[in-house]
Structure formats: C-alpha cells, structure tokens
Image (cartoon, rainbow, N blue to C red; front, side, top):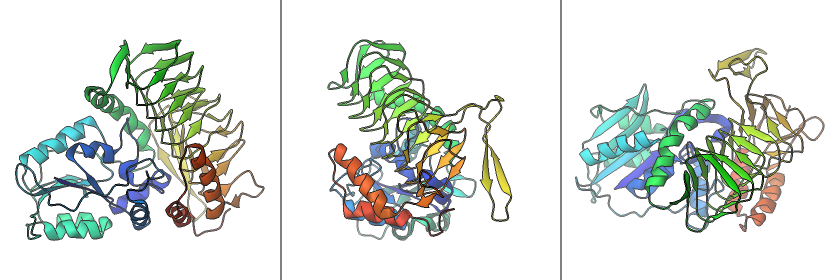
Length: 423
C-alpha cells in the first residue's frame, strides 16, 4: 500500500516548530506521524519546497537533520487486499494510537472516502491502478506535485465522508497538550511491539540498553530504546521514553511525560517535555512542559519557567505590525518554552513561561518571550547569525555525534534565514 503524508497551507501556522522539518516529523507523545504511518509501509512525504529539495539531496545517504529517515519509497504499484489504494494523510494529524487504529480501519475497509476536520482534509483513501488509470490517479499526482494544493485536489473528487474523527495540530501552543494526550497510547504501542523486556517493574528496555544501578523507577512505564544509556543515581517517574543512543547523565531526575530523542544528552531535571533528536541538555537546570528542537544545546544552568507567579493560565503575546499585540490564551497553568531547531543558550539562561525561540537563535541571560530566528542575543544589538555561521556550529556538533555535514544541510539553513533584518 502506498502512503502519502502531505503538508497543507495551514502548516505554516506551526511556525518555529516546523520551519526546519516536515510537520509529520514532529515528535508528539513518543512518536512522529511519519513513524506511526510506517506501520502501513513506506511513507512518501509531500512537503514544502525547501524540505522537498533537502530530502531529495540527502535521500538514502544519511538521516535527516531532524532525525527522520530519508529513504524514498519504491515506485512499485500500491497493492492491498482490496486492490490498489493510496492512503493520504495530512501532516498535521495528531500521531496518536487512536488515530492509528482509525486509519487502519479505513484502509481495511478499502472504500474511497475522506475524513475532514472543519475545512481541512485530515485523511483520504484513494483508488489507483498500476497502469496509472485508476479513478484517483490524477489526484495522487496533483498531491505529489503540489502538497499545499492537496485540500483542493482531494475535495474536488467529491468523496463520501467517513464516519471517523481525526484531530489536527493547528497552532504551536497546542503541542504541549497534544503531547500529553498522545504519550500513554504511543508508549503502549512501543511496549506492545515486543522489542523490550521488563527488566524490573515498570522499566522496559531493549536488549542492548545500558542501565547503571542504582536507578530508581518510582513508577512506570519507562521505555529505554536500543543502545541508550542511563547513568547511576537517576530517578525516573514515568511515563518516559528514552530514544536510541540517548544518554541520561548521573543524578538526573526525569519526570512524567518526558520524551528524549535519538542521541540526546540529558541531565538535571526534565518534566513533560519533548527533546527532539541530537540535542543536548546535559547539565543542571530545569526544563519543563516544553518542546525542544533538534541540534539544540541548552548550556549549564539553563532553566525554563513553566508556572506563573500568580499560578494563573499562561498567555502568549505576539506583536502586530501596528504596534499592538495579539494575546493567545493557552488554557494551561503549566507551559514552558517552544525552542526551534539549532538553538543555543549560554550558561545560566532563563526562559520565561511561554517563550518562543526561533530557529538557529542564540540566547542568554533573561530571555524575552519571543526571539526571532537567527538572532544572536549574546551580541550587543542582537545581530543576525548568518547561515554560514550556523553551518559551522552544526558541523562541529555533528562531528560529536559521528556525522558529517552535507551541502544539503547548508542549503537548508540558507533557506531558513528570514528576509527581514534583525531588530
């Protein structure tokens, strides 16, 4: 069966979280949508042009900078027990266990159908044939050629509405709620895979995971992936997921709802947070109710606020062109920071509740609520970091993970630099 995950126009609203990665490669719970859809077979990403160019350039040669696979699906005819079908899924679909079950039921039924959420297309089952003359082949070709126009292309087919509900992520601040909702189910999917053994009550580990006693698991489940390492005197309060090749340093306190990605280095206190692959938070400091991108380095003593002094709900503020501001009510009492890919902090950095730190920014001291992409706060006046400077830093970080930078990585960074000047 062929699976296509497409980015519609609304993906731009996810801002810094998906600027440097496909929305389907955003970790929520302990999975990405691309990984979850992998249960149906190879996944074809139909994404924004700068990401499509990047994936084409690194195809099959190395993992993407966000940690996802770059192997392109074969061009063979899609087949299933019902004939030739294509599952088309919006990249903003929440990667939950429940949605996996919903999509599986649609595939098994095999009927041409569509699932909508408001005006958006969440998913569709289409029929094609090996000779290219299937009922929906033109629509599939249109989605692959222009992902942003997928909603119109699929809508034009007039497909019957499925009796199903699938949620989409619509704005950046929703990811904290979504992560918390997804975590128990996606962790259960991992445990049910049979890849882990329960080495003690509540602690599930791959055969080659390294856990140095004494380690305290006050409650589970805690899932430790292949070749991950947990140092001595670590306290684990599940649910927790620790990815492949990740390292949890001695004396760390990893608290409920934390997902640590591939090859991350983590220490200190972390709670209810996603740390995407290849990032560092190795020293003391609190990180809570946050989402941290890939190739981020949070220096010693970096701390997030996640609770207002008034104990009230966190509100996010966004300046407008006319000098005013728009206020977003998150409805959450606990809300930390949203940190884009390639971000760096200096020692003793403080991130306030609701901080949003743009891609490749460098911050230190008491950080404002919003820091634009590529701004270097450490330099007086907030000078702009160039793509070349960001690439030099990335190359040095990659070397510490045994990876080499490619021209595609440099080109991706160049494509992310904002047009407007800093400040």
